[in-house]
Image (cartoon, rainbow, N blue to C red; front, top):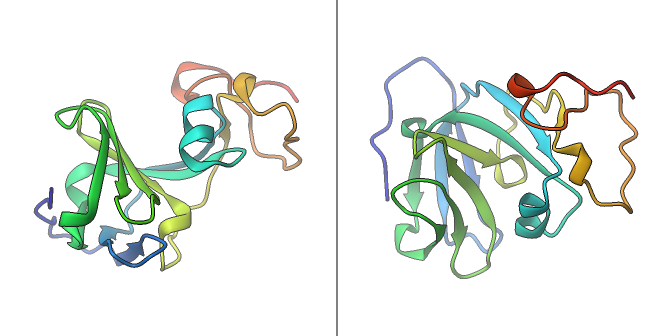
Length: 149
């Protein structure tokens, strides 16, 4: 599943799974970063929300452990990429395979971007309270107006 890295001036970031079997490299050229509270992201991460950053798929490359990847979903379109050994969710491939949503917790290096909003807040865990001042959206921000909270 390795992709051909792009040539640009973005600083490369390193990421890896919990057990270290899978390592990846991604350009520090993320277009957006969000905290997703949808039920699928909560189940995939086992937490209240998934902090992720979006980038064009070709800007992410598996550096080690290609044989340790577990794909959940349609490999030709939208799917999640996990480590088959430890189960870490590394990234999700979305928008018909054109974009990657990198799980920020798997980055070794600090990206230049941080989450700018909470999305899918109407399906957030009832036991979790959002206490920061980031905008909150019912859907993806380009499809909904921020909720007044």
